Image (tube, rainbow, N blue to C red; front, top):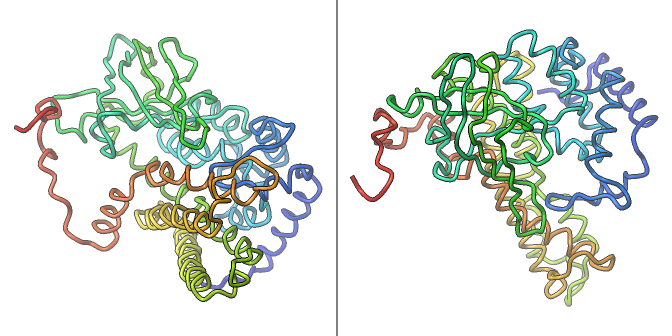
Length: 415
């Protein structure tokens, strides 16, 4: 792959760079550069408000969701132009955290399955950050088995009535809309009785309870549905074909998450470059250098694996299972790196929130947030199965419940 810009790409890069330079909220640049996974806040400003303002400004100028069609709020740009934009946006791209699910997962699913009327109504405000979307898949009893969900959707006239519970729903507490996977036929095998919908998160009967995390934040939520009505017109795909619809969401999810997860390596390298150990500068210690070299290789591998996925997109291919590699490697990498940084800091690693403990607070926040990263979008075990079966072509796991009607799968004890 040739990584040099073509003349057209160089022209696009120059335009993007000039617009960002003239319009980005520079007053927050240094804070954004210092923010990390698990710790993103702005002094004297609400992070979500700043993010929405920046997204709206981009949308008004034609720089939002670059790869989306213009009719739906995008620019109709190529995948490579989208990468160029992300490179030039730099630290300001961290303001997009609230829109990742909507732009990377819900939007593509709506484009593939929603009516034209709904696409034109919902996609432009989504692209502009005026409306935020979430993804309602995981459930307490299902674990990593998405198809094991129990939230019910029953048809009553022209509506569907929803009852059940979702968990670990990122951003539900500030979302306007969401895509929802439900069970509509429990008498068939679990993958065949699912149906997808989209709905307003302000619908009567929805209760959202934020989950308090170890790092003090509440990014995830429990969501309860009690007799929530959804018009049949808001169904995505055919009845009982929700699993196939969800594959569009999941493939885009793994690409969005895998390509966007911070690894912590740049922060660790900078930290080690300035850290003094008892024996001298950390960067001159053989053990430290060996660790840095190991993680540098993994970070490089992630970069070029992502480039391979981008090349596939540029050929018009759908995001594939190989994107699980980025999710698997980056998730474990940031946990290992943050734990190692805390070891290097010693007692200072327990400090957080003080101006004199900037690095300590950063890596502590990373470590406390890292377990969630390894679960959201699919656990490490799910990612390994996907890579083994769909990338490497290895035999699949034994799934004894695959062809059994869902309502006959034992739920307690042993059968």
